[in-house]
Amino acid sequence: MVFSRMIFTSAAIFGFAFIGFCSSGAISAHAASVLKSADTDHDGTLDLAEVKAAASTEFDKLNKDSDDTLDLKEAKGRLSKKEFKAGDPDDDGTLTKDEYLAIVERLFGKADKDNDGTLDQKELGSKAGHALSRLIE
Ligand SMILES: [Ca+2]
Ligand SMILES: [Ca+2]
Ligand SMILES: [Ca+2]
Image 1: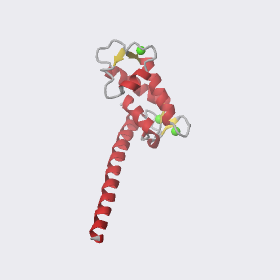
Image 2: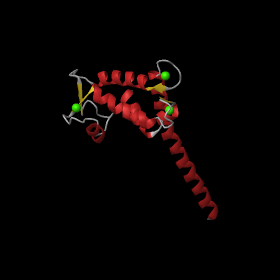
Image 3: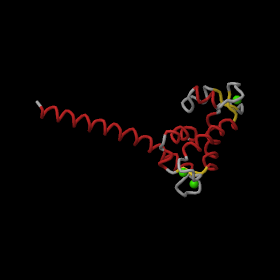
Image 4: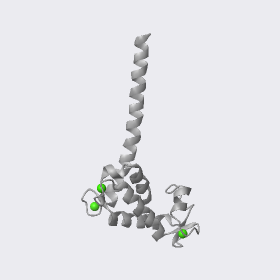
């Protein structure tokens, strides 16, 4: 009885560890791919200029009707409704590229935990880094 409970417990612990491993693995896989594609000077980190350049390209890609702004529908999957509203200070229901890049810059500052002006893969895998990587790839 005690023995079988022990097996069950260790199986459960193993299961949780496995799930945890998979989800953090998925985040860092995305972080790694964002890092690879946006790191144009190949120094292994992203500075703000690289992040903004990638975000600007992504904005153009998301902006399907080419009217210079993103509406909530175009930003879907990248920004939650709340994030969209917070990034739209003139409250006109659309994001200009400047507003989009301001969100990116804010998230960059949040993700740059050691304040060295660059994001490494670990910082990109953080919560803010993950939110940021959605906006640049
Ligand atoms: Ca770089
Ligand atoms: Ca706006
Ligand atoms: Ca940093």
